[in-house]
Length: 286
Image (cartoon, rainbow, N blue to C red):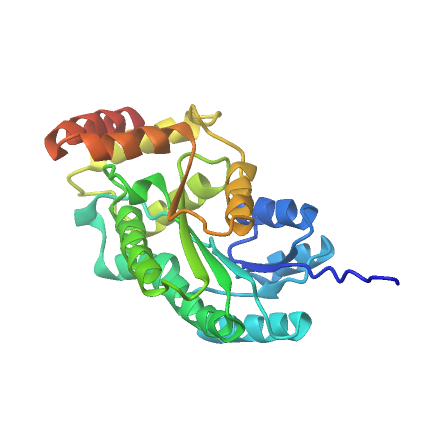
């Protein structure tokens, strides 16, 4: 008697795949025989992904129609299923809290928080119908601790952490698992994109922090190497793979030494004691 084994590739949708973590995770998972659907918000980046051999689609986290279109196309290819979602697309908006207009803060949340929530709700309908799934949220060490001049990004990641913890409780016994990945410094274009947003949205002249801003800008323009403990994007990809291949994944996965250190200090130190350390770190960075 001849037995046939049908191998079905597990599928995953990844957002923010133009560069960095999203792109490298897409490559890494494809090498592990996953059916990867990387998305990006610009047509030229989608084309590049297609040229690399991916089934890629346009997905802008501020455009719900692009989410619906991407999901429709993906479900056509998979036959109506989607095994996993990796929410990754995000950016950082630097600047002191009092220099952030409400509109700039809203823009940060539209991409880093509300867009993720909208997409997650859509994917949950698919996963509930099929009876299983995994949702992976790419948070940050700045979803655990706060640093000066990171208020917009900090708050978007703190919000993500709280929403994800709540959703995890609500998904109990659903066979749908949700986990947070919390990286520290990862080699990517994150810093360059953040500096663009800083120059675009923060009014330096007349700010109480004008002198500090000028010093930071000058230092960053001279800087040619990454911070200590910086890891390649594949460090995050390996955590994604671990979650995908674990029956009952953990709520949180740390990446990079700073995340482990600050995660520990957050648990054991009082707020004033932790603040002293964070002030020192902030001052060294700024």
